[in-house]
Length: 287
Image (cartoon, rainbow, N blue to C red; front, side, top):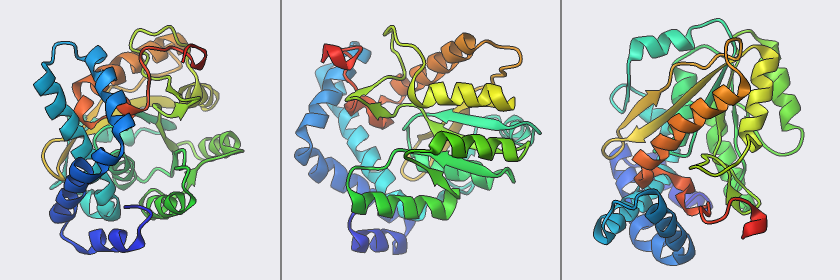
């Protein structure tokens, strides 16, 4: 969908609810059949994370997951129209706004749950903080270019590739209220290293970078995510900020792992990385 300019144009000019439904239907009924390896990997991981589910319940959850992925892609063309109270409800909204209005740098930590692009866009719309987003581009150049163009329209500058850490440091140090949005479940070396799910893994990747940056600029960490409730409607959930002035890196790591790990299981039907990780192997050497 992202690599097809016509489809992207079409989704933009359809009603949001219609575009979202079309994307979900195409993903569940077309894309799923073409991505059998990813579907099988998600099924195997889900069996480990949710052994309580029957086979029928597991298949229904996986179908909802493919639907969510398609809806999210279709909604990418309409994110600015979703950043409204009609589409996003915030848990404890007044307290959340107080966190955003604080005068220290803020690093938002999340996962690919629900519509993760909407989470970044909502954060930007809810505050006057100068924000920056971090993501890894798709391998396909056309898709990557379309995705970056779409994200820059509602997230401001996005960072990827070499030299990213220097750009992030400069951004956070340039303003006492600067903010950063980082997704922690990135795929590296054919594996997703976070959340841990009991695996003996140290902080690495985006989380390791976030911890180092946060301590250098005295930033607080905000674990949060946005979960789909029905169609193009969502609820933003958040954890009270974690402060490196009063917490060790290990304590922050454990708190983020516990909160977002539980969220990825609770919303396994909306978690993208379920098909990217291999819970039977802790490291690439074991694969």
